[in-house]
Image (cartoon, rainbow, N blue to C red; front, side, top):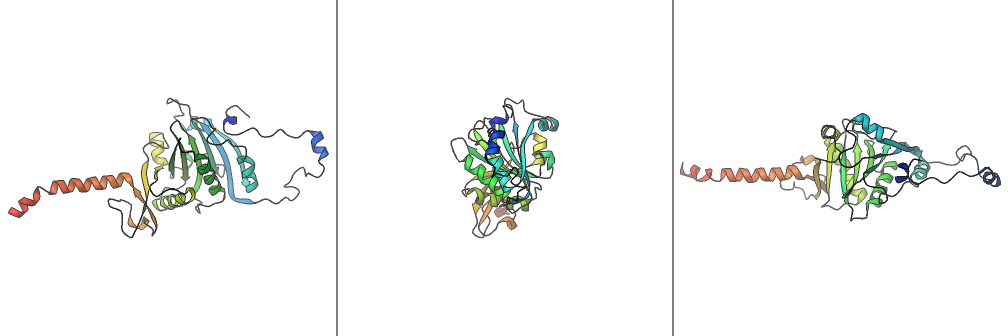
Length: 274
């Protein structure tokens, strides 16, 4: 195991010596071959990691990014998941500028792998020591298909200087799928209604070469049957209990209403004079 790999995964225990294996004659050489029960996952998953050097020296091309990706291992059973997950270091102990991925079907966790997709982004401040639990909940939700969306293709945790960043990738950035995943994310991570989350398409990421920069910010909002003031999300995406409020579009809509009122105000006396 390389030095970089040990920063995201602990070394596995050393293999037993021949004498040790001989003394335990009851242990099967291959548990699966002996009919041990395993629990198949819906699809195969893989753990990957990437290191992003600081000071703007990160990969700028797809080829460079691919060369920085390292696969830690793949599995398609619950037992295989635990075998790999048990040796992963906690996000709290992984050095800054590393990103750890859990990706579906051995597909590389890259924007180019899902050109029509995008991701939800949850920023967790360093002072909030919940990153380990939140990352674990995301991993469990993926292998257990708790999202209920086969469109989920990857989750990641990025260790940065100020914040740790969770991202939830999906293949198709249609608004209906995007909102459905975002709502389920709130439930899985038990996010507060005032939590701000971001969404960004990979099309935009390939333009500005960033997963997180210039993302659209949303906030979860309770809905009592009418749209929140200034909300720009179509009414059909407002289910009976919780909804998303697009912060940027909402602020723009409110500003537009104010500007419209300001421009119409001087015209009112003239209309009365006529």
